Length: 376
Image (cartoon, rainbow, N blue to C red; front, top):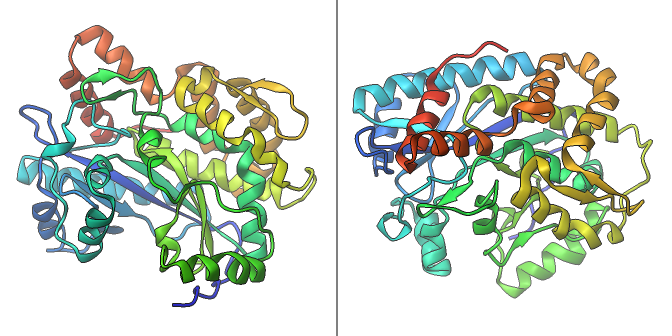
């Protein structure tokens, strides 16, 4: 099948998807209750969209299209409240976090949906190991070429989002020493990583996608697990590197941070992206996954080594006029709060483990963080 036409729309709109854990509130392990949750939530209007994910101990929610941070956050809070209420009726806890700290992947069951069964048949045990939880952010683009430009221009800022959202320090019961262990699971898939360096949509469609389609490896853009990928049916680019944060406030702030960055990049005052920018891409990605905000990155064009934390704080200063124009000052205040000292949610979970001494206590804390309203 041919690649869908890019549905060009309004630039800088945004939407959020969150993959969430379904937890047994007694033993704090994952619980296979996605079908029950979806059935209950379908009985009355839901303030967003909710659907199953690849295993039956997780669900995915998504927002409407928004232009403002406050409207995005308001909807995410309504979704959160509806999920918590449904979970309370079913005695099921919900939480964010990029990984569950001690669940055993062989115990997971593939959700009974044709595409998930197909993926399980193709990827074998990797499908169950893909019980990890991410935040995806869509940004609307005025044209397909603008989308490709943003996709590649953002490569230099990708470590920011990994470090800020990191919430997966533990996996299979042990501290991985990574702030984001989740991305290691994603990287195991053959069509993960970064998109090919093409800035013209016609070239992307004919030179790359059509050739990949002829190989039989891919049928649509869904088959690519790139860190950032175009979504032509929506007219967006989709950032996929974020762990699911523990709070909807953090999730909304990350989306608005990306929106402000894209607005700045569209002014085209920075040097244009180049293929050589990707020489340091995997190194920068690793630093953000391993060390979070305490990592370092190499600027792809100046080759200067930069602290990820300091680079975020410097970027926030440059984004001030864009935040004012977009009405997202509160979101950037949240990012400042994280980068300037509060730390990411991986730090919070490790602190909980150090104080309580059990991986169960980390899940309990994640459930508390998800359900409690918080002013911004």
